[in-house]
Amino acid sequence: MLATVTILALLLVLAAATLVLQRKLPADDDELVDAIDALLPQTQCAQCGHPGCRPYAQAVAQGGDIDLCPPGGTALVHQLADLMEVDVGAQTAATADIMVAKIDERSCIGCTLCLAPCPVDAIVGAQGYLHTIIVDECTGCELCISPCPVDCITLHPVSPPEQPPKPERQGLGCINCGQCVPVCPKSLAPDQLLQLTQGRAMQAAHDLGLQDCIECSLCDKACPSKINLAELFGQAKIEDQLRVRDRDQRERSKRRFGDHVARLEARHQDAAERRRRRLLDRKLGSTRGDAQGGR
Image 1 (cartoon, one colour):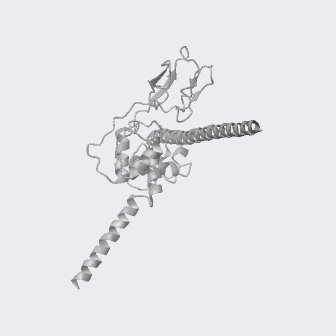
Image 2 (cartoon, rainbow, N blue to C red):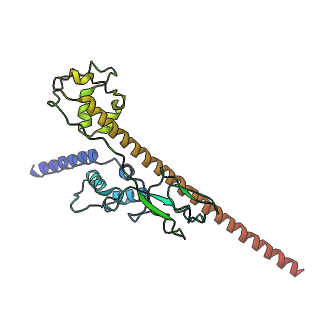
Image 3 (tube, rainbow, N blue to C red):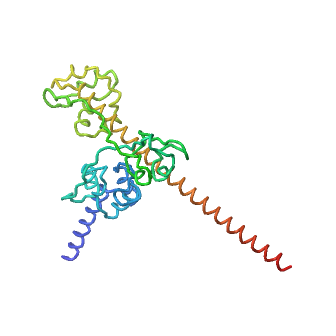
């Protein structure tokens, strides 16, 4: 009887642990790698020691260090720690400034040596012509600097987008009375938007229609707690726009990196095929020469 009770208790503990893991972590390794990769800045800079953000995500999913990404900084370390359920401890990554490359056109010799190392094809140029950087696509990875034979490429810091001062939250806290809902001309739910934006659930607030708010202040007038909702939503809209822009930039960098790798692989295969054909032509020519000499 005691053995049966012990076994049942162990089964219950295992079931509970399984449920916790299912809630905390994605269902399989691929989903976990996707979740980690979505947090990475997608600079493809290889400063972590891996050839791109996706390989680093795979390494983290297998238990690798979570503090090897300078562009992500300490904030990324904490995000990865929450996802992987590990203790951050002393693991911190020095947050790097946002940098972009710049080519000194007076010194550029048009050698094209910087084009291939760029993981997102942010450099435009041709042999013998001046090169230039597509600033909006540059991730500041530094990979183009060392190949340059005349040292005409340098990195320059980019000022982060200026955010307006955060408005002070006036009045009492939300009492969930719902009086702000019927007065909204855009049929939004200001009470729910307030909870989501104050709780930093920006994606959920975005999905609920945050960007549709016209900041008319009718919800302010209806609020018995005198909360300046329109001003708070205006600030939240700006933060959400910056978040979406950063997300789109990372997705664009990821796509450009994939295209870059595919093009390099195709170029390598073409070169290998040309070498194979040259060798075959040489063998055929040698065989024909031997045959004619035998006659």
